[in-house]
Length: 218
Image (cartoon, rainbow, N blue to C red; front, side, top):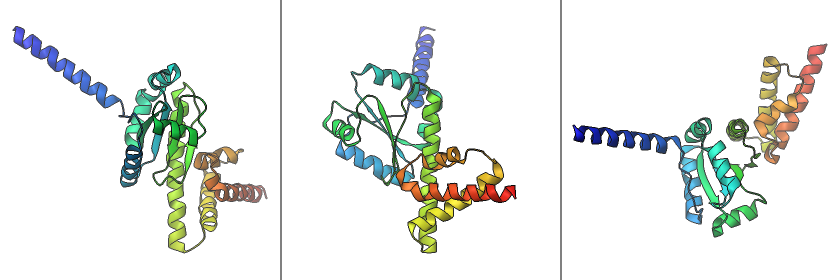
């Protein structure tokens, strides 16, 4: 009987530990050149963007952000399915260099980077996990639209600007028919996050929405 009780507690502990480990996305500490490079090789293979958490193990705000935001179930689920994750500790040389290159003046800081490193977005810091979740969704959408633009460019043999305009016109017509929003600026920012790479897309989108609205009023 004693053996059965011990076996029960051991099994319970193993299951609980496994659930705990499964619940948290493994974030790589002590960012190094090999780690960072391998992460983006894996990101390209898996077609996923990368999330970098700049932090310090001695920083109270970093620990609170991890506990109250990054380790919440919704964020963990989204990270595990859609992102590769890296932690950059500013106590290390590589972490400090990453923070300096990206203008990090306060900890923690979150960055989203496309697998080809061509687009990068610095997240808004908040203890509201919904804000991080929405930014993750928007960045995923942003990367997908970039891929659509580049595919259109290559298959139609046009310039990047022409491809951005064509895809923007498609999305503007879709959104106009779907929502009739009075604030298309907010809609286009869910595709571009205000990133410079999408400047021609955003401009074309706004022009197209204005023309569509004008025509609908006639």
